[in-house]
Image: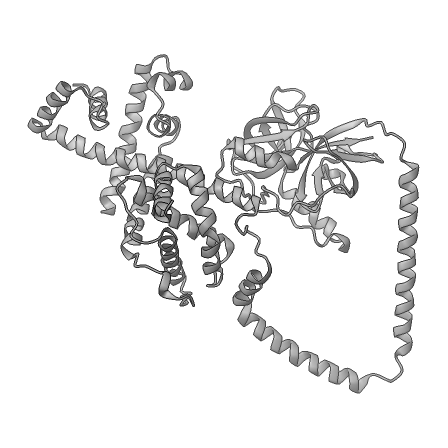
Length: 188
Length: 365
């Protein structure tokens, strides 16, 4: 098998959150990125953070499908992690110029910008859900995230029937959307 | 149409679950009614955000799991840096401080040695010799002690009837465990058994009866030190109502039970303990209480005799106190408590899988 088809398969696995694929990518790339970060004033915790964020950038790209990588997977991850780390150093006023060669680095500024915007939206959703309170939080998570049916939800939350659960879910949803969109419109 | 139904219809439309004719009818409604159209647009965006939130959350948990697995299998360099990487890291971090410290130290040393050289009377050979002799005596003493211990071990080799039992857990991979003082009160022999049934002899290194804490050290050649423990010990207190779980040996197998923290203090406002809403049995004593991040927040110690499902745990900060107390003895300087939980973010089944190997049954005579 050609390396390119290999990587294509890996990305397809990544897109559906397949643990084996994630593990392979992780194993192949983590040490290089950890070395980069540690050689540039970082700790191993920083390395884990940055690497996982770079993985999320990649995941965001592939999860909706139709994404093709125009460089090697490892180059992409390295470039993203490098950019993320330099950015973080800058924010902490600890800028240093990494002593690595620029050979294996591609331009990823757009990706990072996109990622930051998406991250902000994600934070809004997280904030909105965590402000919802119980039982709304669990109810919404069960329906929209764990994709449980209304019958299942009714029985596990102790509602007398699915219609009652539905009414309750509706009320929760309205509150959630209100919190979310208030932030969303302010953030735009 | 009712609002509840409307959302239902819109969601079915967005998910593409409508039959063609229904879909057509709905699309016509959308065209004619701008409110409906706005609702569809808004709700599509909302559902997209929601889905993404869920997927990213799952992905983060996969990443976390993978990281822990690979680090454990040694396939990536784990949290502990080794060899040159660590030296490089420390060097970079402390370059300046080291330089300053080194120059100050250099100057001081030079001055002091000059002074000493100038001021010391000659002929201090005698003192040196004495200290050498002293060392020799100490060594002999050590050898004698070891022999006596050997003999003692041989004498006590007859089978031991264990009377008391409980749970304990590792707080340092080198073989340090914590348990309740009441389990090992007046015991001569204390052994611990892991969930595979392997037995290890231990020595009691510290008992603090008023806190009901005892520290043990495994003294058995068959015990292999563990490079890093998967859980951390929490220094600060936990919030009331937080879900918690415990692992212990109320019988010969390790048993999991879960509950919640019901009060930050124990019975009658006791500040040493906290109250748990959990079913605990004899034998759970000395077991760790974990929060959902896999951090130890306490040691199960007693249960309420008047109420069902109420137990008390010694707050974890007292483990730190006990260890500090022990470390006053220079022989235990190397003891390090784990403060970071590497199982944070994993689901409970995974957490228990990784944790259970470090929870031991205690048997005392």
